Amino acid sequence: MGSGGSKYKQPRAIPTKWLPGFAATLPSLTGKVVAITGCTTGTGYVCARECARKGAHVILLNRASSRATAAEDKLRKEAPGAVLTSFECDLTSFASVQKAARAMRTSFESIGIDVLCNNAGVMALADQATGDGFDVQMQTNHLSHFLLTREVFPLLEKAAELRGESRVVNHSSLAARIGKPLDEKYLGKNGGNLGGNGKSYIFGGARWLRYHQTKLANVVFTYALSDRLKAAGKDRIKVLCAAPGLAATNLQVPLFLPVGDLAQCWCSLTICAHHRSLPLPMMGSMTDGSCPSVILQRTAPWPSYTVVFRRTSSQGISSNLRLQASKVDRVYTIDLC
Image (cartoon, rainbow, N blue to C red; front, side, top):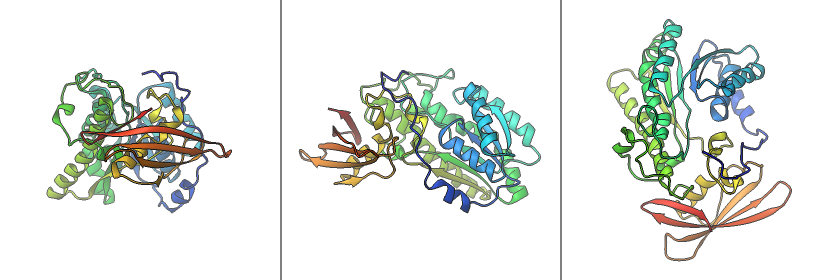
């Protein structure tokens, strides 16, 4: 999908503040095997780099592309001595996922994998089907990760047997909390017939409802698998779920956003409206390192609010954007006004 004329093509570089100190507290991962989906950029890349620096054998699961090759080259430079293995894994194709899983089982049968990080994801894409017939967001974010977990489960069992524990880490989002309960139609072969695209790009249109469903599915999968493993006496395999909050990654780049700088704050604006906060500084920072804050001014009986977004840049230049928040079946739409 095009960018609609936005100048936002990639997140601006922000100096790392907290990661070095956090990484220093992490234990050695020497002797561990960590598999990560979607690690060409963003959270997946950082996870792969830090695990490699800690001594883990890192399995990179990405679609075949120049980006994947460049990411592996960059990892080897940023983590000298890194032990890396790459397998082609296109999450929009079940056949590709199964092929990657077979290759992993062959290569790591004797030692297993200690961590499967189901990290890759897409956000608010058009209403279209994959070659398998499923919604492109649901297949990429949840169904293929479900399949991958099932296919490499023997490797998780092997690692737990040899080293006492293994784990599955699913990557969800705060968007899991904003929207309707999980609906089975989003999990079926209904790609291209799930509400169209709508006009809202801020947690209000159909594309955002589909994204919400995928992130909620991640959470439900986490709880369900954990419960079943405990019931089966296999609780040495941990199942965890993480939500990164606001992060300056490439996840927002495909979106049609008229104001690229706002790409990092849609989620927080929506959550502010959802919780009726007055006023609320947003955690994190914009892509240019500025410090944003949100003030919700009540303009009519709840849930109507005027949202004033105030941004002060590192150069001391401030700007205001006014947006309108309105409630639609528990989903909050915020549009430029």
